[in-house]
Amino acid sequence: MKRRSFISKIAIAGSLPTLIPKSLFAQDKASPLIDGPVAVCTWNFEKANATAGQALLEGKDALTAAILAAQVEEENEDNSTVGFGGTPDRDGKVTLDACVMDHNGNCGAVLAVENVVHVAALARDVMEKTPHVMLAGKGAEKFARSLDYPETQLLTPKTKKAWEKWKKEALFQPIINIENHDTIGVLCRDKAGNISGACSTSGLGYKMNGRIGDSPIIGSGLYIDNEIGGAVATGMGEEVVKTVGSFLIVELMRQGKTPQEACDEAIKRILKKQAGKPNFQVAYIALDKKGNVGARSIHQGFSYMHFNNNINQNIKVEPI
Ligand code: SD4
Image 1 (cartoon, protein in one colour):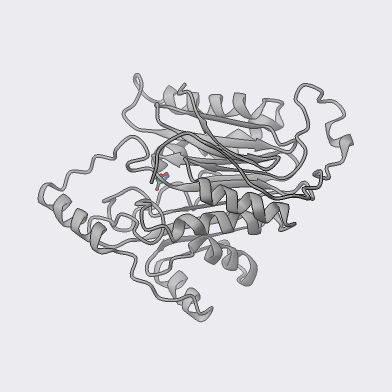
Image 2: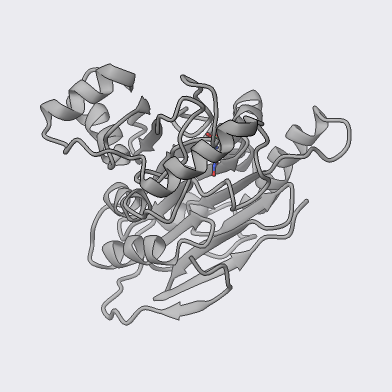
């Protein structure tokens, strides 16, 4: 995968302005109202974000667009932190976590799922077809089989070989950036002005079997409040969970902070618990109801994709 900055134009005509009641922003004149659908996702997943952008331009709802973006990376064998080709745990098992949240505040999640590629879609099925919010492990897999999700071996020859090499030393040392953090978190605002999101990951490489990070935890890896906006996280999940990062960002925006200020504050909350700058990465993206976006990371190396007005752009993020 190329790690470069780019701007790609997507040749799609007919984008309609996003319909958001102006009265919502009557007292907030500080930030502009961005017209048209908006899609943002973690890292440099150009194709994933373009897929979401195109779906939004075609009139698909924000949740569908976010899941379509997640699926691009879930199928991408070269992404070693999501779906097929994801790095296994210490026991050689690829276990996936995902969640989704829609503009009505509905949410669904699956945890530690094996042999299913499209776990963000499965999280949506948990949300829409069960009385529950979360399904884990064998129960989630049984549910997937009942819906005819194909059974897929997620460990590839490449990741198996890397795991066998890792086992010789068996050191658990998460790498700071994209080399080991390629989780996809997506936030979309559709033509109706509704915001939804999705998050999908295989978690930290060589984690303990059964370990769950932030990504499938509503409020940590993802949170949406359609009156305010949404946020997603990537990086060291344990630290995101400790500060309930995505919920925190949305609540800070509710109190009047911009998406950028809210991301800054959420990163500072993590740093406050550390002596000096820690040797792990956490990064957030936030999108508000008006289409404004903010992002911040602890370390260099984080970037995100931004789609609006037919332009799909990779934005490098300055660390705190
Ligand atoms: C986790 N937050 O399981 C995930 C890892 C991650 O890119 O973001 N990787 O902790």
